[in-house]
Amino acid sequence: MTRRNHDRMEWWRDARFGMFIHWGLYAVPAGIWKGRKVEGIGEWIMCHERIPVREYEEQARKFTPVKFNAREWVRLAKDAGQKYLVITAKHHDGFAMYDSACSEYDIVDATPWGKDPMKELARECRKAGIKFCFYYSQFQDWEHPNGGNNTWDYDESAKDYDQYIAEKVKPQLRELLTNYGPIGLIWFDTPIRMTTDQSRDIKQFVRSIQPDCLVSGRIAHNIHGIGDYSSLGDNQHPVGPVVGDWETPCTINDTWGFKSWDKNWKSVDYLVNLMVNCAAKGVNYLLNVGPTAEGVIPRASVTRLRGVGKWLRVNGEAIYGTQASPYAYDFDWCRMTCRPGKLYLHLAKWPRKTVTLPGLRNRVESARILGDAGASVEVRQQHNRKQDKHVVEVRLPRKRSGKIVTVVALDLVGEVDVDSTPTQGPDGSVLLPAHLAVLRGPKSLRIASSGAIDGWCSTTPSATWTFNLNEPGLYRVFVRTLLNRDVAQGYGTHNVKVTVSGKSVRGKAGLKDIIMDPEVNHWHTAQSDIGVLELNKPGQCKLTLRTEKIQRNAPAGLALCGVRLAKAEG
Image 1 (cartoon, rainbow, N blue to C red):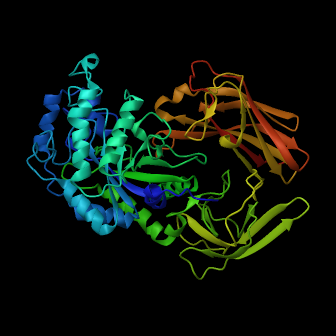
Image 2 (tube, rainbow, N blue to C red):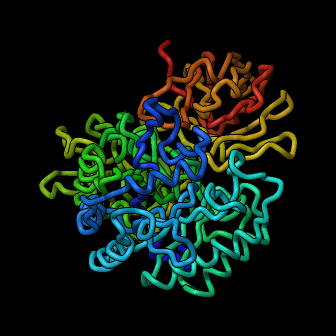
Image 3 (cartoon, rainbow, N blue to C red):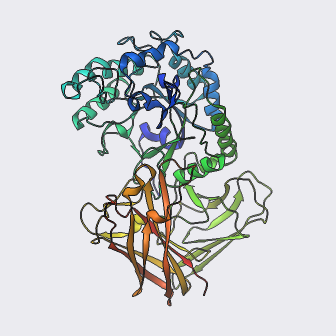
């Protein structure tokens, strides 16, 4: 495995974990408007309630973050193990959270507090060795007459977006890139009606001021090469490996900007497992906090970030500077990261003494548990020369080290080298992810950034996998699908048929089996049991999935994540 050599991106690829901060006037109403709780994310309250600009501006006179402490914020990021910090310099409401000369609609000129928090944050980040970065809403601006998406104050058809870029976007970007020292990246967002030329022009403008400043993928509409890296959807978990550089922005509760009544806090266990899954897919993890109007990061966020940091102080070797799993598929019992000469097994569940790793061709010199030098870990390797099958058995202590995810580090001879053909695991299961399937169907059929199949909206398509089966017997077939909670009904439940070695099983897969996990914001997965197949011969097999009926009124169709075979009782 080789790493692409690009100095501008190197720090970002090594960082793996960053802090997102959504802070602005929306922290004043904190999710409540005129005595009523407002549904949706906190920073969108102006849009959701269609609050007139003049009325929303009054929030600035109430914005007095007297408890803001840049050193404490940066220390929290440091304690959490985060390597870069991205803060909202201007969100969609158009309010600048720094001293902007091109507008008095900013935290210095419009609030009683009258200070520039970005100067202090930039200074503290430099001291702590954390990359300082800005979020900037380049299209949506609900304050500016020519900014995007304020349809309740301004006539959208009469807007001159180029004038808005010239009057506000570029002058403010110049301020951000000249007044606060080196900036790691500008996190652009929601391009909506921006043209490709406008996106490229803004990127070139950033580069002309700070050549090493990165530009996020949301500067444009998933157009390759404009952003320096790509972004998954908000709170979107990668279900399969990704190609290129990716990041996923996530929240600790449901909102980004502070909302006083959002108490749906994720556990430290959940946050660590999500970070591990992101790293195992080669995806950076940007985790958000939403400070109050007083400038305080909620205690629940602080506690959880420190919990993640505690885990990283023991296991950071297996996250920072690592590459995605060398395997093209996941194992139920662990996630993996690697670096030259090392393979890290992230165990969320403690197995019964021995784990079996198929397909690893390297010789394992030694094995250890991170953070537990006294633990005994034994390794046994086998190679069937006739079939060219490699198996590594790792014998673990009976007692688990750590309470969340335990990491076993394998020290290898040479670069990591594995056979990535899906192979039956030690528990008898076979995992077949969508991205490894051979797809047949219309041109619209593709693997989406989520790792699931997109465009499966008829009975025409098919997906076929090749895999290695070690033991004949009865196997229960599970079809895995994905949906977005916000539009769940659009995914539907569909009739599917799975065929292996001439034998078929039929069932229904999709929405009917979704379990809405309260810790998950938007993207949920389902596992649909469609029956049992008897597979008589070990060796290489082919599995094909087809749909026999697509539910009407389900425009998203079958969002297939993959298929899982599990040994069934006879």
